[in-house]
Length: 64
Picture 1 (cartoon, rainbow, N blue to C red):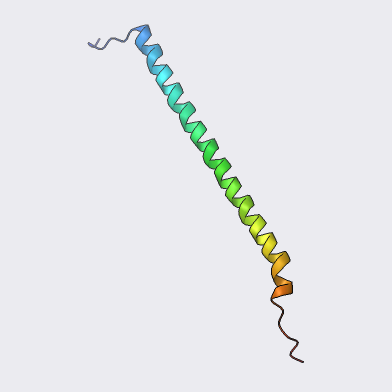
Picture 2 (cartoon, rainbow, N blue to C red; picture 1 turned 30 degrees about the vertical axis):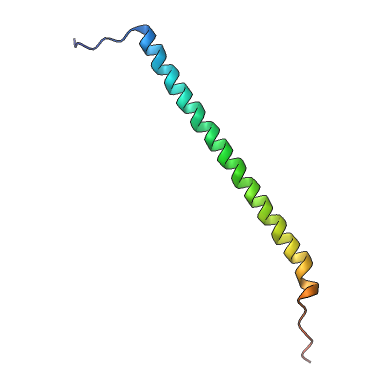
């Protein structure tokens, strides 16, 4: 039909490259997800510490 021929070895190499690219992409996505969760948990801890620590320190005088 056309002049393009692909050997089974070339086909397997192409599939292997696609699988490696997919694997690297998924690993990067998992790493980014873990980093985002770590950042969120740190922000929650700071927020909780601010709620627990700041109200006794920043008391407004009773204006009555």
